Length: 174
Figure 1 (cartoon, rainbow, N blue to C red):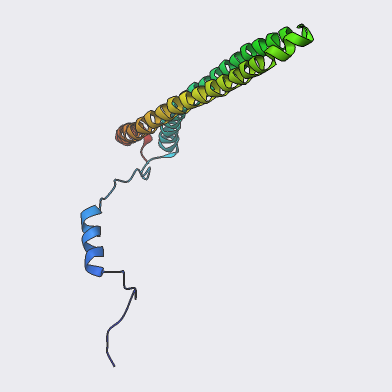
Figure 2: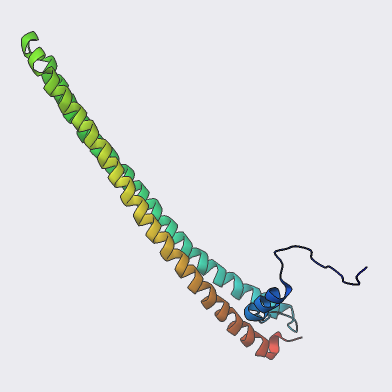
């Protein structure tokens, strides 16, 4: 009988590697405690944090609004193109219906192929506009993610500096 204690019995767990990973990635973060502040100081710190959060959210809403505008523009472009194609199809059908029976038989195949070509053109244009919208919205979202990452660190730094100023003010100390 062995006197070993198996804390974690998995063939995939290596305690040496786990410790190395911990030592490599450990990072202590400063505390943003409002301890030592009176009620006015805590209220001031809360106000600063609220203002910074509002500013960050406004930036995100700007991107959302831009994407919504692009979506509406895409929809209107698709609708306009569809209407133009439908007008051409209606003209071709009217032309076909106004022909005599002999002319209808001669031109029916040509007009039908023209109508189907217009429908294919409409579908291709819709796909192109959708792909364009997807690319633009994806680039906006990736830019927003990068901006959010930068803004988070910037706002954290701003909050910490403002918190230090509040802590340094004797009117806000307990």
